[in-house]
Image (cartoon, rainbow, N blue to C red):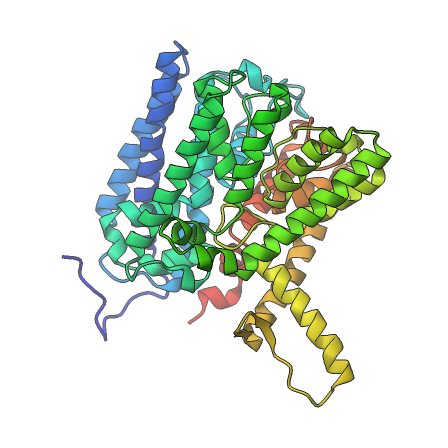
Length: 504
């Protein structure tokens, strides 16, 4: 029986012992997940099995030791939850990077951390297939071991729903402070808690996630252009809205309308709140289709598909079929922050390119695996702008901001406004740093928003057929941090750098 915190017991402002213990548990599970690439390496007779096995055993042993020694005995408080979540992604990337270097695939540990953080944060930016600033040529995606390709996609899949939420479902310690961890990492609203117990909620979400992944895997495997390995990798990357592919040309390499359709549909589904998926599968179809965020997300997606498809047909001389095919795929890929590519949007005519660029500042629904600003925030800020116009005409009227029948309270509006300001400020800082490293304006802005929005491919030198290998080490660490900040939706990680976090 876990000892609960009692009134009067003195504890430090931030107790690092439970933080260390839970991080140890997460490291253990990350190490255990590396046993799957070991099996893939043995199946394909690849030497990289030893790199994965060494990392897995070390992580499991070290993680188990930390968990046993520092196992929490008190309720986890909110500051400790923020610290755990922020450190989990960073430590996970440091540990998950070792197979890339131990196998000799990557010469730079910085590149390995970049690739792993890109995986766990479901960004999908890669350093494979390009020459680094030090002259080392990273191998092309098709030339690395399948076990490493599998690990990239698996890291997407684990990071998509969140290793924190996975732990909520599996670790018995999560009776202590599980809800604080859930609220710190999970981007859905409190009303999305499906059951009174957070472990059951996490289990249900993961059940939906696994089931949808399995369905997409079967549908992709059924097509002759994909074998089982390519199908499982793309299913992992799609449901996580990640974007890592087994091909340098991404989904375009398969040149299949069927594959494009399947991946487009599942990218769109992955951009919807998974709690709403559970309600739909549980028979509450009316609640799913009445959800205003889903309707807004669908409306925006359809509008941009029609506009970009028309632009491709008129300005780029695509046939109507090809314009709709590539326009639909790229719109859904960017709006959900997946980052798959079926066409090189960097060479589209300005109108289609500009419309697609706008989608880099959107994102899927809250509670989805997508990154970005999120649809619910865009809805609320749009309604608030409309309210301000009405207020000018009727200055004495009390005009609340509503989403359906729900009135959005002023503190929430201030938080969302603060989020927007901070989001664009961080985007500007990232662009400024990349510009100072010698990249042109379009490339700098593209790399910054693609990392912060967890999209992956950007613009200019970082387009859909390019990579990030040539970015200097300092720039890669900056983009790595942007990925982490974006995945944890700004406040979760930035709050630990404020003086108020460490004060009583």
